[in-house]
Image 1 (cartoon, rainbow, N blue to C red):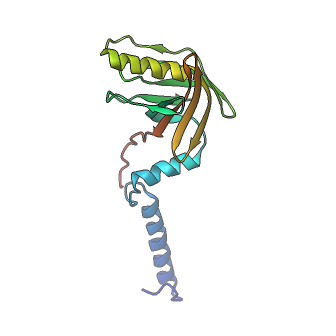
Image 2: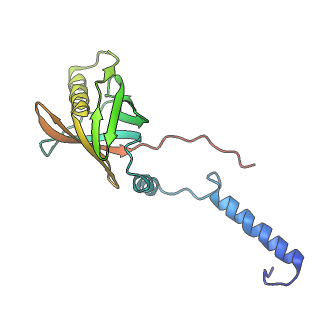
Image 3: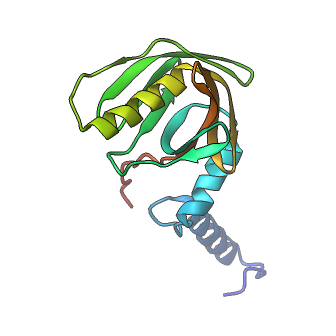
Length: 171
């Protein structure tokens, strides 16, 4: 069918089809899924906000990455002025404040489960580093929190976690 036809019927049908294709392409359930890395980069570039769900990738102390134990994921969820997450064994929660890229994490509370000593030690380093936060950056690499503790300085590096969204109906 040629949309350049002068017939009002054909024009109307072409417009309905064009609008329909536009709606279908913009509907998440119908639109072609983007690769995960592309979606994560879009999220990182969309905002330099610390808010969101983050998974700890590594802890660097004095510029050297610390070997990470394979445990339950270590996470941080920054939402409004509240911080919560998992230290690998226990859940934690507390408040935070930002001013520009300056970051202050208020004292954290946590559950008190017992885990193996190496896991507990790693969790203690993570929580101490969080509470020593000085500033943060969000870029295409993810979130970096720069911290200072009595043991030294370092960087917590996080990758974005995509929170599952409810599936929308097609009709």
